[in-house]
Image 1 (cartoon, rainbow, N blue to C red):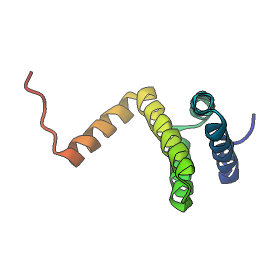
Image 2 (cartoon, helix red, strand yellow):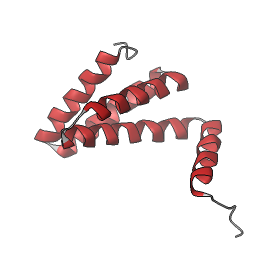
Image 3 (cartoon, helix red, strand yellow):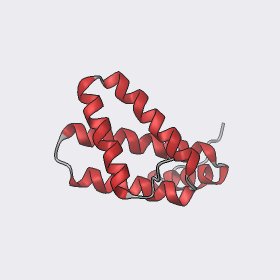
Length: 108
């Protein structure tokens, strides 16, 4: 299995996904899901957060809108999987969102 700890591996995956989205956006979404599944299955939460940061760094360097689209979608899928796989992460994320948006508990 290829190591995803290397930033260049992540960049190679993202470059592949950009090429895919230019050819066939629907196939690119399937590929994003596939690579996210492989990453989440083989990395700890801390490593996933590191990969998310690498993707964010790559996005910040890009001026091409397709690169930014791919990185945003890929990062979103990773965050979604990270949140769904660990109940404590769900609580932390919910607390963060509530802090950001000044949520109040539902009275229903």
